[in-house]
Length: 198
Image 1 (cartoon, rainbow, N blue to C red):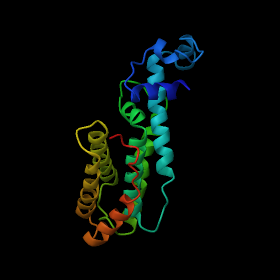
Image 2: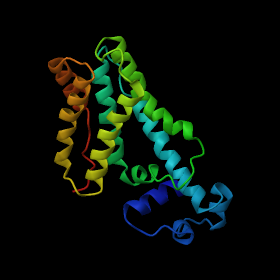
Image 3: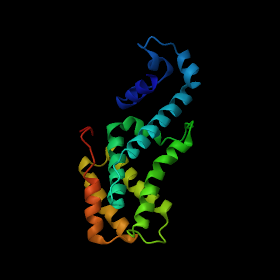
Image 4: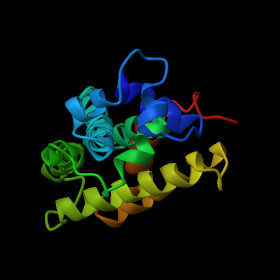
C-alpha cells in the first residue's frame, strides 16, 4: 500500500515525506521504518517494484518464429509499461536508492539478450554480433525516446521514430532490410501508449 501511495504521490507531484506518506492511511511513520528501514528503503522498494513489473511484462511477450519481431515486441512492451506507470519508471532509474535484488533489474535486459541470441541462431544477425552490446543499444533507443516523451520535451507522436531507428540498428547488424522492416513493424504495432498524459 505504501509503495502504491508513494508512486501516486510522485505522479501528482506531491512532496513525499514520512508524514505525507502515511497521512490518512491509519499507519504511523514508524511503519515506514518497520517495513523499509526508512525512506531510502521505501525508494529502493519502489525501484524494485518497477523492475519486477517490467520483467513480468517482458516475460509475457508472446514468442513467435520471428525473433526480430519478438525483440521489437519487447521494446513495445517496455514502452507500454513505462507510459502506463511513469512514476515507477522514473524512480526505477534513480540509482541513489539501493535495490534489494539487482539481479531482477538485470533480468529485464537479459530478455532482450535471449531474443537477440535467437535471431543470431536463425541467421538474422551476423554470427560475430555482440549480443549484450546490441541488447544495450536496443534498450537505449527505447529508454531514451520514452524518457523524452514522458517527461515532456517530445510529443507522443515521436514514438513513431522508434521503428525506423530499430530497423536501421538491426539491419546494420546483419538483418535483411525488407524482412527486418516487416518484423519491426509487426513487433512495434503492439505498443500501447493510450495512458500517456496529454
